[in-house]
Structures are given as structure tokens and as C-alpha cells.
Length: 398
Image 1 (cartoon, rainbow, N blue to C red):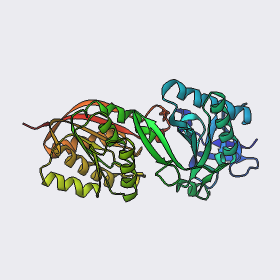
Image 2: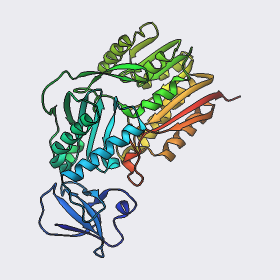
Image 3: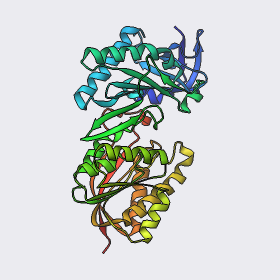
Image 4: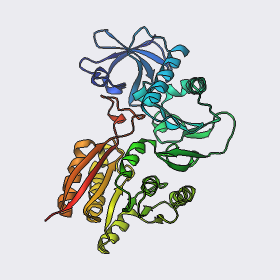
């Protein structure tokens, strides 16, 4: 077994419970290996810390698979990891559509598996996991079918730029027999068409499942604005909850087309209207027009995907929240979030406070929420904690 030895004082992430060893933390590598192969990690004094896979193409040099130094990384080990992940979901969420495997948080770094009805979508972003992917996907399908969840097809969406950092090509396509990639799912009483082939990420944002449900209780008989609607998820939850009217806004023509299909699928044509517009410009125009809503929902994409762009991201979040607050009638509701793990809790909270001050609004916090529990947050793995979602009552400053 190749041994990776850490420098003295390094390995803080894995010692705290995370799973990454960075290139600048390593003192020496003893033995031969191929990128993607399994290695043993030792502390500076020789103490064994577990096993993971190595890749010299990546700054994340080793991704840990186990903390047990004598653990064999074989099919039995992978079957155990898969069974644990699926059984966890059975206990905490609705299995009809959910994230089954969430990378490091399920101790299978670099792998995501989402379940949409009877279809699986797989994303692999690490070289070592690429070597194990075929076996794991087969085990996931077998475990689900043993537990009474038949799977009719599997699609791979390993087309993110993260693969390039690992020396991997971007790929997408069927794993096995072809099938219709427009899949119908049901969540929180709402039906959706999910485009697993060309939709964002793996086709749908499962992480907001219970945040969408939480917003339903504020929407009955309400005038609702859903900005950055994507395929209409928050807007549809508002419509199903009995909103008086819902306006859904997104800059993407494709997303708006899909949102309108979902409106029709749920028979909400008389309630939910979808408009294609730049969110920043739209919010400014609505403020100038002095329009007011009972409920405003802001669900933007990640404005930052690196530490270097946090300041610009803060500016974007501040602007949309200032205008979003101005559009909420006195005593109305604002749902606002960030899905970037680089925009941490403290930064996001600071920006919301600044926005409230600039908008001359007072905020009464109703709830603070994070991602759905099928996207578990592994402490010490900061990247697994990314979604922060506030629900406020907005009160005019008087």
C-alpha cells in the first residue's frame, strides 16, 4: 500500500472530521501508485489515519474513503456505504424523488446520485470515484430494487467543469438502455417535468424541497412574486397552496418554457403567470412602478463559486434583497436564500442586514432553514453546507 505522510501540524480538515488532504499538507509519498488509486494516509508520526484515493492533477490530493486503516476498499465496503446512504434517506425523507448519495457527506467523495421517480441521475467529479462509479451505480440499483424501488433507467450528468480540475473529460449520456429523459415527478403536492438530459445540475433542485413546502403556508389568498423561478418550483408551491396570483420570473427562455409546462401540468394557468426577464432589471422596474406583493421569494443561482468573487456576490445579493424588501407590503413575507457555500452564514446574514437598512425595512425572522436532509451537512466538510434560507416578516420602518 502506498503511504501518504502528512507534514507536522497539517491534516486539520481530516482530523476535524472532513475528508480532504490538500497538496501542500503532504510531506512524502512512499510507494508506487497511479492517479485515482487507493493510498493509506499517515500522520507525521506514522499514525494511520485511513485510506482514500489520490490524484496529483488536483489540489485536493487525497479524498478519504474510510478512517479505518485496515479497511479493504472492495465491493463489500462499497455495498455497505450504498446501503447506509439509502437507509438514511428512507428514515428522513420521501423516497419518490431525493438525493441518494451526496459525495463526502455520504463518505463517497466525488459522487452524486439523484432519484427522480424510477430514474437515477449520476454525477461523478473525482478521478478515484470514476474508477469505482460503475460498481457503485450497479450496487445502488440493486439495493433500491431489493427494497421495492424499481429503476427503469440511469443517466450520467458528469458534465461539470469540476471534472477538468481532476484531469477528466466532461461527459453525459445513458448508463445502460436509453429511455425518455423527460421525467415526471411529484413533490409537496406538485407535479413537475424534469429534464435530466439538459436541465441544470442533474435536472432539478431537490435541496429546496422542504423550503418550498415551508413557504406554502404563507401563500393562501396571497399575491406572490417568485424571482429566479427556474422551472417554477416555488411559484407552483404557492399556486397549489391557494395563492390569489403568482408571478414567476426568470431570465432563461428554456427555464420559462419548462415552468409554463409545469404550470399547465398542475392546472394552474388561471393563477400562475411566467415572464422571462432579467431579475435585476425586473426588480428595479417593479419598485419604480410601486408594485407590492404579499409574498416575495428570491431564489438566485450562486453568485459566487470562489472566495475571490465574494465581494461582487455580496453586491448582487444586497441589490436583489433591497429591491425585494421594497416590494413586500407592510407585514408581508420575504423568502430569501443563497446556494453558495462560499457565501457563508455570517456573510449572508450581514448582507441581509445591510439590505434591510438600505430599504428602510425591519425584519422579523420567522425561520432560518438549510438544504433538505437528503443533502446532509457533514461538519468539517464546509462544501457540504451551502444553502441558507431565511423567511422574514417585513415591516415598514415607522
